[in-house]
Length: 423
Image (cartoon, rainbow, N blue to C red; front, side, top):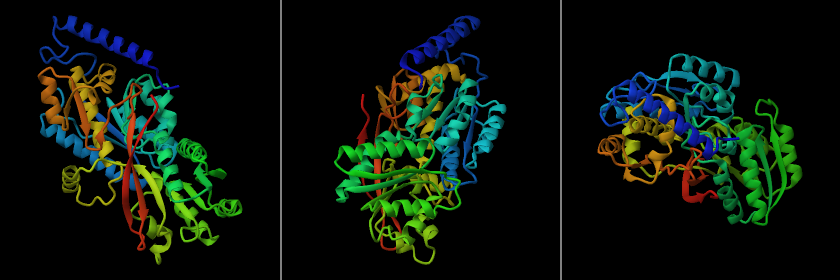
């Protein structure tokens, strides 16, 4: 189970005890009143990341890593956190392998970080979340979308700027139904991401009157996916949903070979397949073979200024998916530390939800920090859009992009739709 509101209240009380203790130790200082650092921190906010530099999601590594570093530079240019610059982040590769991800998280933790950005994949985060949050270190993911995290018992130390797939599934189902499809086959990775989005999409499709004739999970490590394609063909669907990462290119190839590709039926993907390179990976000599394929993914606000500045900072970046969300992870952690006047995770973690909602609007670390110094309650609207965290530390609403591949196999954004969670 994810930590309850009651348990978060306990964390706040614990943090208050730390603050009071620190105030007593410093002769009544701290608490933001005189600028002294409180809690058990050392006065320097130390960050690290565990993100994919190799493996199936390696295409998501560079945008998140570079955006993390860009956020740190932006914060340091604005005076840093608690009057000190954030050092170079400790780096770890999640590599698409749980064992490697766990080892990387261990090394990053051993460097003395206060917060970790990552992992990119939900399964990789689940492999080490207990180790991170159990150590009293904050974890913030820019791209974990599995519904599992909403109710996960993380002690109040896990956050995400990406929305749950419980918000994406209904939009994906709506796109499929709008295109006139009634009989749907869904294939998904046999992990928390795949199963979560499969169930969310299936439920929404069935509520909308469609029939889901096949809902099959597969081993993402399988080397032969021909049998999976045969199962799809046997279901005789008029639409196919593929919830996959890089291995989805093989599934697409097999579907096309068996006559259930985008030229014959509706084919849909999700955020794991949204890539500028998908067409060339599926068919280097005929990228138009995936023309007509559609999908959904968590979107970012139209933010030309941020994109321009990020590309100036990292000119070689091609993919930008989840880069804004990574930037926002860093920024809300920094703002929470400023609000708490502490780099101690036990003290600043309870402030993270609050800096994203119900206060005076601000859109940059510098502006938000100035408001905090004036004693204001802030509402940071990120470069990915308004965050408005719910009590469990994740967005309660989401902007979902509907994308498609054109006749040349080029990725295009068709539109965006709002999705709001219950309660």
